[in-house]
Image (cartoon, rainbow, N blue to C red; front, side):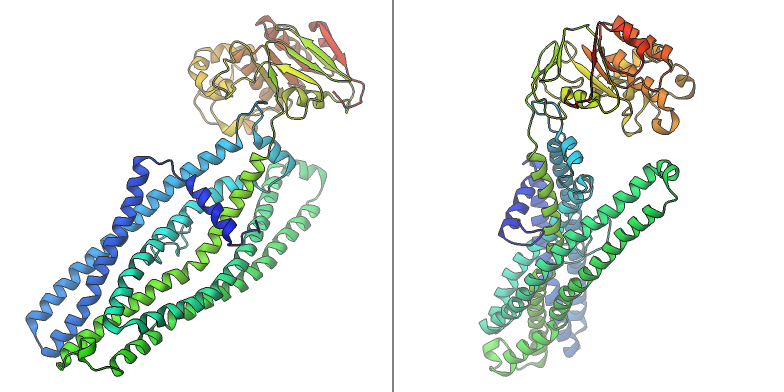
Length: 578
């Protein structure tokens, strides 16, 4: 599938994504039916409204005050009804798009964090291998804008520059279908087929040129989004690693790199502007020449036939009424065709959004499972390593730097291929509904603790199982005291949302992560230098505390003093095989 080009393959992709934007509930059908109903009402009231000026002209020519008042009252109420119907189209469209955004994002989350036989979510491999650029943008931005752009194309309102790129400007496909059908019939009835063919032929020529420009523009939009995402993510990296950068350099390298990023984005944006200008010029050419086309068709109808054949009357007021109404009907037909032409720009955006989302989904679904066998014990056997642990047994993994300690734990976790036999209990907080992890489970901690989303102390202790927060609330004070963090309760409540990375030192962060182990009491706690920032006494105390609860501790540590706490010790020699 070409990057963002609007072809049959991409149209199929758009339909598949659209199916993921709804779940077939009654409320979904009601919201869609509401859009259809309000579009039909809008067209009906709009038609009645455009007939009134002809009656006004007739009343003014005849100087009929009573008829003028009736026509003005009719104009007021039909205009009011048209405005209300238009507003309700916007309301129904936005509510529907918001529901679609929810369904699509949940679907992407389900795939991104999908539970497989190796209990490793695809997000790890997608982020690690960089198989798709900026997956966060695909989920957050594209999954938001795609439903709103799609709803705008269907129901209208794609032309504003609001938060989600929609508003109350421009009609949609539904309005185009209803108005084209109705006004084509009315135009034929009043002026014959020639005017209808003239309107459709004019539109076909412009649409053909627009199709070519849409494909070129959408491809450049895809490139632009990637360049902007790289620029943004690079600035985020500078923000998160500003101290490391300050230690290492004066910022010259970062400035040059980011200048290059913005230069690439700006240069490509010039190309986007050029092609969008061409596309908009086609749209504007069509729109501004509508009156020329209308008067040409109207003049042909009036001047080439006798009045009676076209419904004219000898009375000038009747003729003025007919001309005003027929002109309004014909311009409405051309306006309906304008809707189709104006879909060029939002269609190019929709094509780019759909391509990016589908590229993301393809990369996520391509992630293979490693097929880990779950047992009560922990067994890992490869050509260079033989680990066989029963519940409550502990293992110390030692060795010099780059000897393969972290590599070994990555293989045991399932992040990397095992290269041999791997059997272990499931991960704490397993998403598998058939696994009761409290009876047998494994918890992994790294030297840089993961304290997600600035969530409260209570949730940090209960992580990764949100269903256990009530139990954690009962035990939090005791557990925090055991890991040496009881003083945190003097500063924060259990429900306070705090940026723990900013508040806590590296050692305190490791203690908080170890509090999870004491709370969940897994069968095995696999710690990859997860005590490296603690003093020796604290490390020994916490390892003993875990072992006292029957937790089998697998620890990577450089300290020789802890060796006496472990029944088994593996010394890796540096082959990196694990």
